[in-house]
Length: 464
Image 1: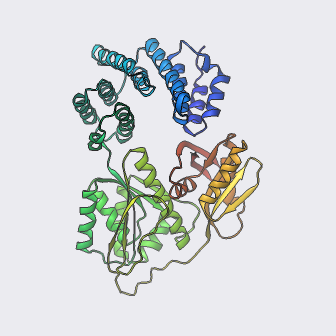
Image 2: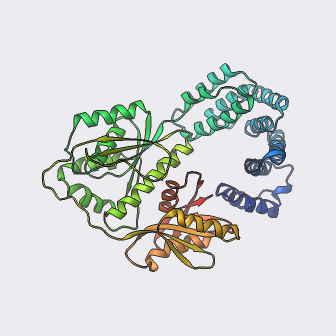
Image 3: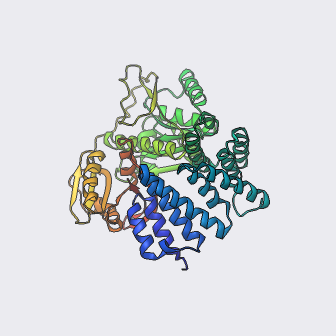
C-alpha cells in the first residue's frame, strides 16, 4: 500500500512519546503493519518492534528482536540503503544470531565500498562502517573507523551519543570491553548555581572554576545569570567554548533589573555579554519577578535540563555550586549526580539584593475528565498521573507559581495540553517535565514539538 505521511508522523510521535501500544494500534489501523514492499513502512514497523523488544524479556524479547531484524532486512533488500541493513545486523546479534549478524555486517561493508556516495551524511556512513566492523569483532578497525566518523562531524553530539549507545549494546553482547568508547563520549553537562553579593572578581575562586571545568571536560552548562557567582561560572563556560543555556524565573528585563542591576550596576555589562553569547535563553513564565520560590523552581528545571542533556548525549551530569564560607552542604533534589561546592566570601558593602517572597510552586494535573488537582511537588503529581493512565486516561501536567487558587490565566496552558493528550499518555509543560526529572531518576522525557494556546506557543513533552 502507499504510505501516508500523516500516518508516519503520528505513529512516530506516539512511539517517541512513550505510547508504544497506541503507536502499534495506529500502525495496524493505517494498514502499515501489513506492508511488505514499502521500505519506509517496513523500517517504521521494525522500529516499533525494536521498542517492544526493549520492554520485553526472555523469549518474548528475542521474538521481537527477530521480527525487527527481519523487517529491517526486508527494507534494505527493497530500498538498498545501509541504514536498515546495519540495524538488521545488530538486532540479529542481540537476538542471539551471531553468525547471521556477521554475514549481514559483511554485506554492509561491501555495500559501503560499492556505493561510497550513498544519500546519507558522511558521519553516519563512517559510523555504519565502524558498527559493521565491531559486529565482526574487528575492534581495532572499529575504533579507527569511529574516530574517522567523529572527525567528519566533531560537534554532532547527539549522533555520536546514539552511536555510543548502540556500540555499548554490541560490546555487551560480544563480551568485549566497552571502556574504549569513553574517549568518544560528548562533554559533560553541568547544572550550576551560586551566591549573589560576591566581589566583581575573586581570582582564586574563578581559577578553580576554570580548572575544574577543564578537568571534568564540561561542554554544556545550565543555570541562571544572577549577579555574582552565576556570572563567574557562566563566563568560565563561555571562555572554554561550552554551550551556555540560561534559565530565568521571569522575563529577562525584570531579572536584569532585580537580580543584576539592583545588586551592583557594574554586573550589567557582563550579564548582557553572557546573554548574547548564550546558546539558549529560557524565561519561565509563571513568575512576574524573582522570588525564593521562583528561584527554587528555576533551579529544579535547570537541574532537570542538565540531566536530560547528559542522558541524550550518553555522558555524565555534574553539579557545581558556589556558596558562602559558612553555607550548609548542597542538597539539591534527589537526582544522582556528582556535585562539588566551592566557597567564596560575600562582600559587606551594604547593598540590599534581597528579593521578596511571592507565590508558591504547585504541580497541576488535569485528566480527560476535566478535574483540576494541585500538588505540592511534581513527584506527587506524577504518582497520581501514573494511576490515571493505568486506567486508560490521558493526563496533562504543569508546574508554576500560584499566588492563590489557579484561575483561567494559570490553567490555560494545562487545558491546551489536556486537549492533545491521548489515552495512556502523560504530557507536560517544560517546567513540569524537567523539574520532575530532577526528582525521578528513571523518568523518560521526550520532546514532542510545540503546541499553541491563548498564551502563545510553548514546547510539549511526553513522560514515561
